[in-house]
Image (cartoon, rainbow over all chains, first blue to last red; front, side, top):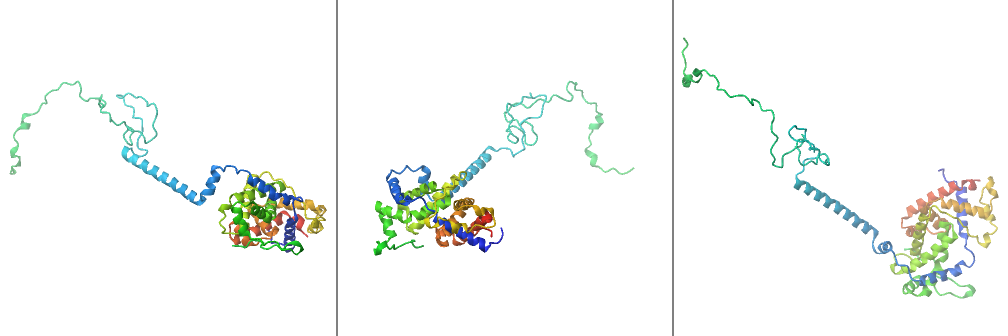
Length: 174
Length: 208
């Protein structure tokens, strides 16, 4: 805005001062007091809960109390969650997958509902392999090396087993 | 604490009216004396009504809000501790009531302008303030009042209030600060900003 023009400013003040001359219709103030007193004698409407609170409670104290309660609830909730984590020994976040790797021995049954990442209880952290916590037999290894072959004694030269106890004797060079 | 606006009122014809003792009237009103309530209403009704009227620019709203102000004040008079003048306390109730009303009815502003005093009826003095170089010179006094009130309605409630209390009603900055619960510098700043805004809104009418 531009700098105040003194002439304009003077006119504005006069215009505003002229508003003082605006009056209600004649006799308005003669009746006004009676109207107020009549209404005052009527039973007061029952104050709402909000009005009663406004009258009786200091808004600053109320705001401070609400803030303290909110902080208290947040701290209590945080501590409670922390102790639950410690008790359950959950895997660290993001280190467990619910689905095991497909294995030919284990039947691949999809879980009814996939748990979120990191919340799987029966998986090996980081690998996605299913942990065996139930005590069931581990899966059999199908590939058995040497299976079906007859055992035969090895052919060994008997001199191989001869006494070599004197092996620490020093032989003079021939 | 500021003094009450009037203490002694000399009567016409040489008679002396009983001295206006606000504290006594307030304590009587507090004990349920309707005569004291009546005296307090008559003492302040014009100023309370005028403040609300200049804030709302509507006679019906101003009449209702002024009644509500006094009723609320008498129903809560037990809460008046005497930390400030009764007049200031009453003004605070009126102002808070009116600002709440304006905020709740922001979208619906209906101007209804009261008549000027008899001495201002010709409106020549008022019209003399309007620029002679603009077509708006042809407007009559009633239109000019409407334009001024419409410009007032464009101000925020706090700016409108400070202009009403200072420029229209002539209250000092200190008393306005007490009513608005802010310091004198805030009152001055708001007044300066409000006048600039009004000047901008009325620039077509105020230029030479």
